[in-house]
Length: 162
Image (cartoon, rainbow, N blue to C red; front, side, top):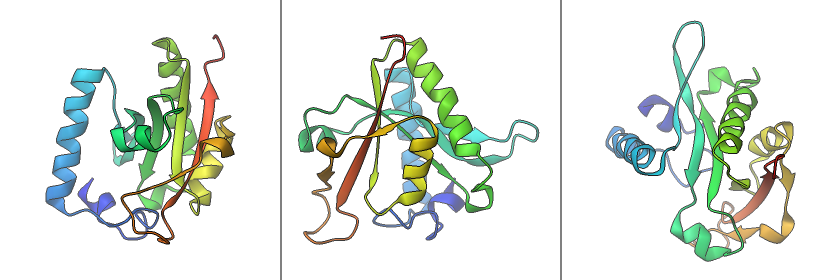
């Protein structure tokens, strides 16, 4: 994961790359959140080989995102794959499995949030049947005014059985 989180191209829609130490903190947080929440972003592996290719999963939205737009539901879906695995349909495949899990535990809706400029992630959101919600857009207030990553877009998908 440190190689993936440390790759400037993979992280081009994030404010910075992560160090090994920061990656380890993220991994420990994911383990803790999975234990307390029942789910969180998890390692994604290729089925045949078990090769680590990134992460995919569900996560409870951070408090600052919920504060930026209180109408947001509390669970998001997300992914980050090593660049050598882009364009193979792996992000949508894994995300669909996580959506199935979300519906199986009775979540009424799942959000996806990304930088406005992140067209590749928005394409994945569309491929998994999410709908763009312009009313949910907000700004990442952790970034300076005018920062190109500050505008955020929101996609939603409702539980089909709700």
